[in-house]
Length: 229
Image (cartoon, rainbow, N blue to C red; front, side):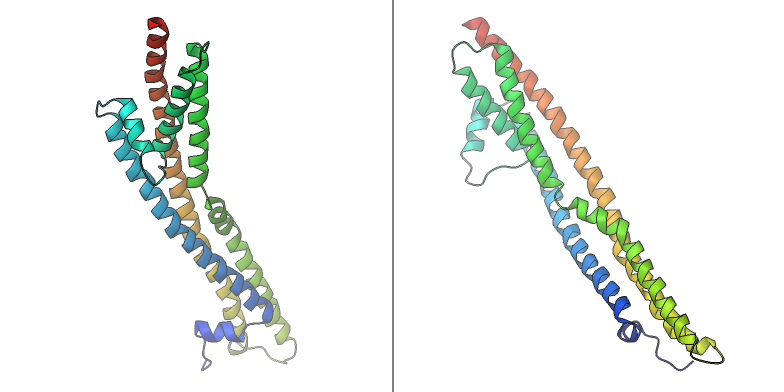
């Protein structure tokens, strides 16, 4: 068998449909790798900022001073810092209004924190659905290209009197390349999606815990303020 069966030659000699399938899979792979690197950077930054803000929050300083520090930043905060900023801002605003009891005060603060939390989770989960789509569909797209290529290979055998392995090997090989490219696109996307989804869930758990802890602290401030008045 003297025919050149390199990957490039197989792709160039493939049928138009198989080449189209390969182009789609390569584009999906490039897009998924772009998302993988982007989400890695975003989640890494989110973990670091969460650790830093938790350290500042539990350092024992005054919450009002911490809030003023956050508000004074030129760049808007993200993650847990944003949740604190929204919650404390609403708490301070409602506390200035007459006739607001502690329950209403806490309800407003918690609502603001939950809104900020949902926005942050939406930001962290951006494009993860694309990774899931690439991971779940790429093998089937590659399989379609393989089936189409094999059909063409066997169709070509109908025009000869005696079929040999040398005649059918290039057609079968170019068809199997589609499956290989499909797996190449799918496997990293599935691994990244599972890992990043787990990291987002862990960050969400930390957000939930922080909301409850901050709510408890604000509840004490609300109760003491109403008692003192």
